[in-house]
Length: 169
Image 1 (tube, rainbow, N blue to C red):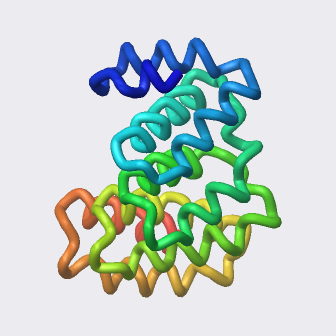
Image 2: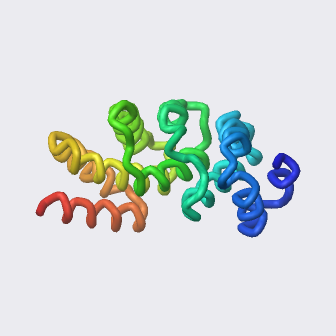
């Protein structure tokens, strides 16, 4: 697997990794360990493969919620890793025992000026889903979005405005 990860990044290479690890818990675990090692490009490629596994309805993403929660809270992890995990978290049911940590991380990533636009956008998506479970978060999310809008990129503004519209219903 490390040989595949060492090759130049490509979708076809990621799909080869998906074939290798998608239905093999031990190999998938190794891939997660590489991703969480926070080793630059190697970790980024591993995370990309993990996301492709999930997109192809393979892998064991949901077995690693505690690790994803820790990674999102970690200051030393790259935006690339966080972006990939947050992208997937928008589409899965987060276990109750990990929800508080993930919610806190998403709010922190939203207000962190150094967070990448995609990290903020996917954090908004996760938080919008969490508002459905915890309506008391609605006002806090609305306030965060309203604070973001004046200086946000056009894509983030668009996402924020659409979420505000849905929250106002």
